[in-house]
Image 1 (cartoon, rainbow, N blue to C red):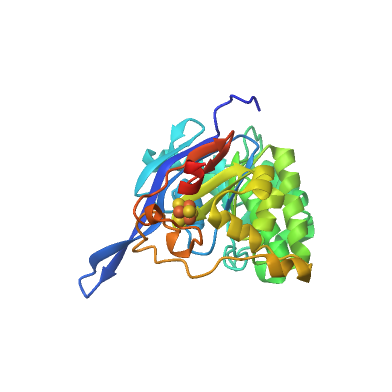
Image 2 (image 1 turned 90 degrees about the horizontal axis):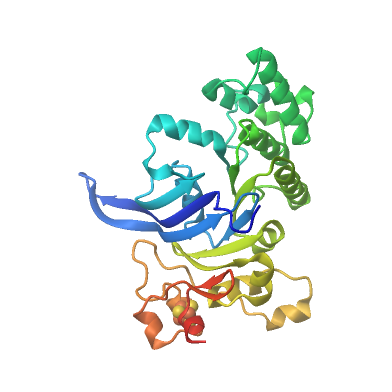
Length: 332
Ligand code: SF4
């Protein structure tokens, strides 16, 4: 990738509000600010990690990119096309290039379909692989190739999902996502439902497939150690906003936002002596229906100042490629 090449995906001021309804007439009494002005880009062949506590809006971002939920406002430009305004027939063909692997491999595969049908689902919707003389042979060859790529065998194709472990199901979900030759895959907590013993295998498989097919990933997780291992750059979300974004090596050595520092301090380490000196994050995430004024993190921030309660910090580039939204960094 040339350093000045345009991003594969550019997201600008993405907002997703969910209405809160009450009463027999379903009157809208407020909104959940799930995603509230998120901006980032993903380059070709890059993995951008998106990390944050449960409920911070990271899964909603992933779904809004593919319009599995319709964004309230903002822009998502993929391969030069505005995704948020595409009519449904164009959105369908765009989805060939953008895929998603969901967190739960138990509910994301139809229990009544054989693995062959699941992996080949995309061909039933979008047609057989390109350039195929005999569509059935081409489809079958592609499914066989995909199932091998994810480390399963042809014998598995006639079986049903309940015959597989969680790790194997996630491999099947990955084969399905890759069937239509996408450029970009949203990986929504792809290993969090797996046993620790198979997590490493799944992560290595994702890396190998990325190298082989030149994929770009948005890797969503609450686990900073996994995101650090997988990502080229990392963005941290808090209560619907990105508060810090940096290259992965800078991020883990030199995080500046107090929330990021607290997240890093919460990564489990095996040395009990070091554990005593590390302060994790305290308090609960405030309600996204009524986010705090000023800096959204101020009720939990040990460094909060008066201005943090009234004035919202804006993202600023503190060193090349390292962006932070915190008044302390703006002052430095
Ligand atoms: Fe803490 Fe203030 Fe920075 Fe927010 S802006 S993270 S409250 S110091």
